[in-house]
Image (cartoon, rainbow, N blue to C red; front, side, top):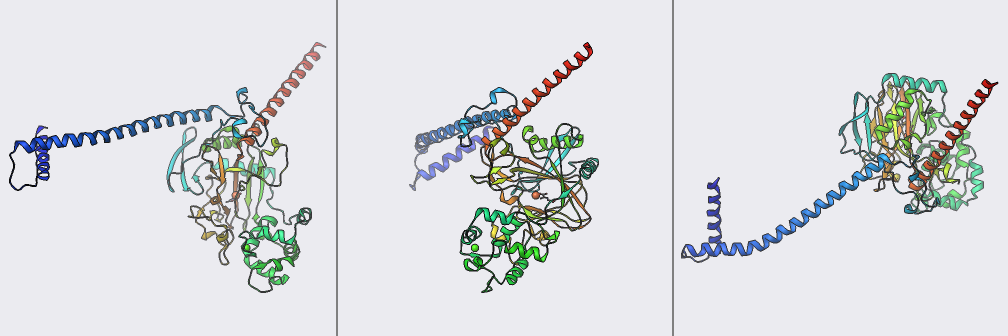
Length: 505
Ligand code: OGA
Ligand code: CA
Ligand code: FE2
């Protein structure tokens, strides 16, 4: 132990003496040794002391910050676990006026946080415990959107039960052939051609590019126009006079507002030309529902780690069947968040109507209920793309939104395997434990089923990006439930009395 230390001291002294002395004749040995150590201790000790103190302070500050972080983080987890504003606990009742404009701090206190599962990296596998006695593996498929795959989420039997229950209930066409009431709507809005033109001209360059027309007509009419269809319509209606494929305001002004629709309907529209070609039904999952459906919902709550009240107040299970040739072109399950946006599910408590209604689906959990012979993958055309540009999705030769033609060109495809679940977030986080902006990268669709049929089911978890509205809604529902239970109790008591009176007689 001692030897190396001695050596180091020797080396140190030697090097400092050689650097501190420039004279050629060697000075007496004792003096430089002292001087060197003197210099070293006076210079080094002060700066050394400073450095140590700075590090010491930084270290202390870091430790304090870490302790505070852990403390508050645990606190918020405890809140998530224990407090739930749909609970009957009177301490969570309204603490301020319930006006939609109420600032966050004067309405419901922020006591509900939405945990988000970490993706870590694409391909990362985490073990999750969802049912007793079984460990599931959850694999990260993409980070934009945050997307996971869980094989064997449902057993073979469970898949069979869900399919049979859906058949028993009966399925309806997911999309009606002829859109109704468009003309009426146009008349009600009473917009001038110029106003409509400006609305359609997304990039505001004074011309309508094909993708601007296509995007709009697909959303409005539910008919999947292709670039070729559009050329055909332009030719048929002789609207693009200069033949440059773009519509000017003047060219557009010569069209009637429903000209495209009329043209298409005259020509005839097939089911394969719709945005969605499938049949579906809804299955209730609450108390009294088939045990498999109730279990499924519980498993979804464990999987997403969201408060059970949120999952329980969400849409019922949607079961979908695609026949051979069926598809669902690329879409978002939920709309963007604008100040005017209102969510369908919370409208019940909002006491208003709104033209900007959307189903606010924070999470989509998609279950594959059978093995598809060929095709029928779920595509995420822009998953983990560097950028999201709406205009570049629809090019003349490749339309990435078209799941009948270009599924193979998207970034990610999930093969349907019986029992597998995939789930993803349709919204980003707001950074404060609530729902933020729409995640545009969550764009997805069902590729055409080329052989066989395809059965899937969707569990959507509805959350209003407006925390106050969600809180008010849950409060409203829990009050309704309370009233209903009281009424049931009263009627039960009454009927008991009734029975007793009968017995008395
Ligand atoms: C849906 C959907 C994808 C699929 O039903 O909203 O996107 O693969 N389905 O069927
Ligand atoms: Ca334009
Ligand atoms: Fe979807």
